[in-house]
Length: 304
Image 1 (spheres, rainbow, N blue to C red):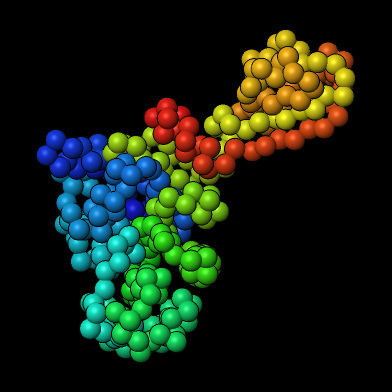
Image 2 (cartoon, rainbow, N blue to C red):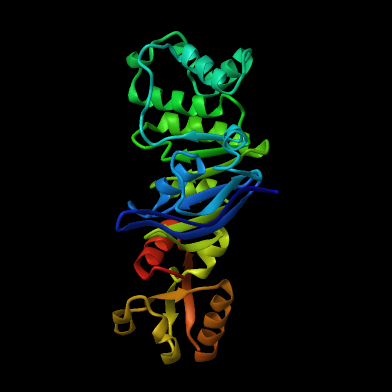
């Protein structure tokens, strides 16, 4: 079942085209990454999904409920952790979460509130006024607010921006558990190592358009950036492999070579060619591209 369906969504701010026809589907139970540089349109898209702004064209549904035409049902399906720290300074942590529960008609929700606070290490702060909390603790409360009505879809907009390692580990442990239990998670982050560790599939936005959409493993395999590093005991690199050198000057220097490879099948072809030429390998290492390599290459070229 599709958790979020985004169809040809456009949004303009006067002369600025924030979103230029974005279409993608996020399936139920996915851990999905929405990545892009500042100004790519990520926050605009999340705001449309959350019902905070309306698209100029296109549509968004959450579990089949249109975010404009059936907004009450759509919002019950969704929990959003915003990037900005927004809080009411007149309530304690527990009062804040009870109030949030009331927005969704949940009158007796203390058992789940206690569980959320325990998993986010907020129990000791339950009766502390919000304005007395540190920035990291306030962000934990934002996460708790988004989860208080057990939404099937959770959107995390830069959830670990400016927070310590402890909160990151606590948050990801809890979110990973919810994802295993069937919750759909959509993550935007500039910490690409987090996206690589958590996300099963990724969409990359640039200038309001989707420029890459695939599983993490296929993206890594499809992008040039993996390197086969060879130390030759004797012999030299055959001339028909020189075009694969990541540093062409290596052809005239010593016996260490770094070759670009796009697929694992290319490694065997390179090794076979070396055997044919009589070269012997002393040491070999395949250095896999990571999400940062992929992100930089796609943002530079605008597409894969």
